[in-house]
Length: 178
Image (cartoon, rainbow, N blue to C red):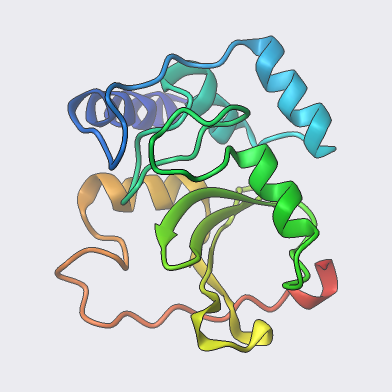
């Protein structure tokens, strides 16, 4: 548990020090009632670390690139909907969005970082539809949310400038979960 607390401290420090695109200030954390409403609306619980990010650090606005999306209400000027609304929209889209895969951060160009809420470690996936083939739009970004956050903090994620053309493995469960 000490490792999780250290990670949360590092994320909080970085979150307070940076502002992704379109955010004037770090949004306040959500309360337990808001988290419960979001989970009720989604039909599943957020993984504990993801829930802690929203309830202890802020309702989006921090993290890689454009930062985490807000949970229930849009707060950024970036125009991206909140997590719950985005999940619902994507589940109804032609992409056959997998059940329990929550879009948490927009990379731009229709790409999203997503958390697989049905895995124990909150596997992080990259949805990258720009190749045109929905069978090859899903990639494993990170084995878990802890590793994904650490890569952001350490500047070692696939999106870092020093990472020359990283190859992410295809996610194999997308079609079975649509």
